[in-house]
Length: 147
Image (cartoon, rainbow, N blue to C red; front, top):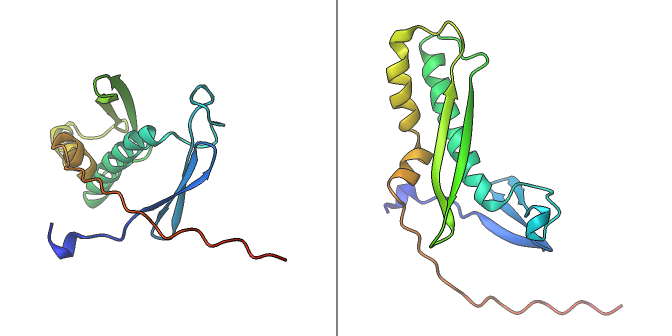
């Protein structure tokens, strides 16, 4: 990967139980597990954020296409359905439905489908990004100051 494409790391920290916080630039994103998974269901599960990323990326690209052509995007929405798979446990399929506003000229529909498929989240999932995992032993925690 070229140096121009390297981004600031996302840093994930444990918040207690099965909750974690991800620091993304200046934004804090919480994740939790549903109650059946031992969590408090206080935030989306990590695997659900893949669908969130895909849906919001598709929505942005469709909205930008419409805006750049003076087309209404009022009422447009994206619905993402995730289907699980096993061996290994993962999302095996994402069904993405883009609900376009009524009155959108028909001649834009085919291009909008191409635009939706061109978002980086779709490309990342469709072309199976490489994932490298490294383990590092951090510095020991500082002992609590005695009072």
